Image (cartoon, rainbow, N blue to C red; front, side):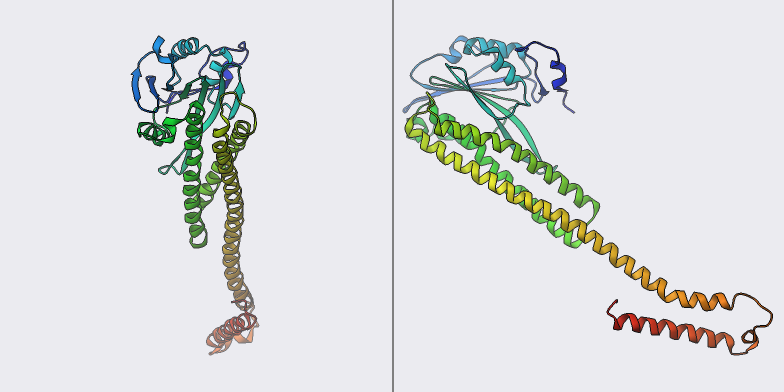
Length: 352
């Protein structure tokens, strides 16, 4: 199990105290810089933040840091970027709610990047912090590996729209990649719901209920993630943000529509899961009723038979039937006929 630092360690510390809250998901911090214009693309990797990492020029620059556990490295990065210590504190706290904050000379955005792990049928959550200023976008991730590979491929493609636009379009592309990945997760959750639905109808075992509750928890996570992101996208689309050009706002409007679609899909899946829980409980209850029905019928048939056996088991001396030579087969025959008659009666009343 990876080592995890809990939020409680910050209790009592002054604001701006830099403590990494979260799991240590990578051993070394990896820094990658991509800067580009309409005709050229340059890529470089760094082990530590250097003076030229955030060099200001006419190119659009995207700097990505994988790994947050090295607090000293983050301090160096924050000093070079000239970002507020509270921003650095929020970057290190991976339990942040998705949000957007305006610090005057830069914008700070927190998003949640989600993955669906098929092996454990669960959603894995990762925080992505974004700094946007001038011609620069800096992303901070908890570990290596993300959903931004299509963005990198578009940057490497000549004459792509990404290469022809500014830093606001790069921000849109990164947010679009994160939100589009939610649709993939919803599809996988939908497939899991279909599989569980078949299991409920065929064999409603206790394991099915565990999977249902796991799905319910995943839907809550998706809902908790996407609702604040809708506010962030809505702010970028409607508000006069200095770094967002008017021609780019139409793309953020389209992104806002995507968030609404995700929310609607989440609500639909949420209702489906709630209905499936009711179906599971009803199916289990019906199966139990069937079992109890069979046991009740068997017990009802044996009640008169037990009565007859009890009467002739009292061992009184003056019981004339005990001396009959044919008494035993006669009593057995009577008991058999009673059982047949009761089965016929149950069948006629459609209890069987």
